[in-house]
Length: 95
Image (cartoon, rainbow, N blue to C red):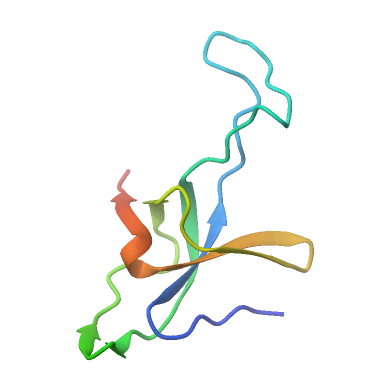
């Protein structure tokens, strides 16, 4: 099955949380904070949203940083995704 976002929505695959701190302390799953970095796996077509033309600037494969409380979490085929509006993406991470 495949997720196809509509309008200005973007489907993200979130990075896995760190299991250890930089100093070597192992974190339990309860203390791990979900990272705000993700990879774009699908992008909607954009279009006219609320009377304004929205052009999609992110593309599949981009690594992005998104707002902490943005989007909706979705589980599909045992994988977890986050669907956000393009405006909830704060930055594209360039290598």
